Length: 394
Ligand SMILES: Cc1cc2nc3c(=O)[nH]c(=O)nc-3n(C[C@H](O)[C@H](O)[C@H](O)COP(=O)(O)OP(=O)(O)OC[C@H]3O[C@@H](n4cnc5c(N)ncnc54)[C@H](O)[C@@H]3O)c2cc1C
Image (cartoon, rainbow, N blue to C red; front, side, top):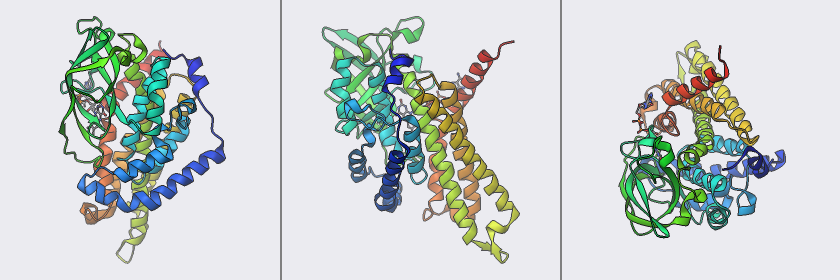
């Protein structure tokens, strides 16, 4: 298991000028390559192959992977700023490299030296891309109820079961997959293990979901039927660690979802601010009406608060400390900010908000997912409260 001390060794600080240069490169890429094709890909639910190749060239598939493995080794703070910037225009494409990086983080934090050397360089270059396979038809929040089972057979494990709602399932090649190695363990989490599950015989994809939003990135089932993989793909090499390895990776995942929420909240604000100054009623721009100003005042404050909470959580992560409290608050607040700001922006746009010619309807469709993924906001609030109560006993 990674300790706070060896996590600190892995953390790289970044020079502000280097960060600025990276953000400028992201801005140029968004302007030239991404923004012109968003509507086409979103409305037709098309996988953005060319953009994925460009993401690999920019190093995004190795953004948080250590430099010794060919990654950029960016601190979580810089990573969060990149995700905010991209999501303020198009949240969905950040999912293509985010769930991939959560898989990579599990290998980097908990894998054996051999696993890191074998897999991380290929993850960092984007040669092998993938995601996180936790959820099953009967178990999302209650992860300990999963039914996928891995049975040791000589030098291999044989896995049977079904995963659902897996991001990048169709277009990815490899997944950090949570299974039961001891279905009878008590407590249940002690019987759970995490595998590096690459596509090969026995692992097929099932139904692709037709979603409300979060288009272009695929969400589908993974089906394991006598799927046989070498035992050295058990992350860390020891059974029974999977639940903590999977949920440990969720800290970075929550920071990422928070950053996506910030991007959606800020993007909705930007669109509403522009529109409110162009659209006129009663002889003046609607931005001059107090009803619209009340909305803009709330939206700008909410977006700012979400950004600050997210940067606070990222800094805690970069310091090497456990930060599930901070990451949970950021994820909860920023995702709700995304929903509220996109709804308010819809009202500012009036009837035009309902036309697919305008971008705001996409923000509205995409934002609700932020309240569900990486731990629902109901669970977030309960976890935040429990930690708060533990820290404040009477
Ligand atoms: C677009 C999309 C992409 C996704 N990508 C991935 C992915 O890449 N990998 C992956 O593994 N999963 C993925 N998921 C699945 C996602 O993580 C789950 O949907 C999420 O964890 C919620 O689980 P559930 O849908 O089973 O809801 P449930 O667990 O059935 O929850 C239903 C409701 O009950 C509430 N609830 C549940 N238990 C409690 C409790 N104990 N106390 C109070 N309230 C409770 C929940 O908050 C929620 O409101 C994705 C989902 C979507 C929609």
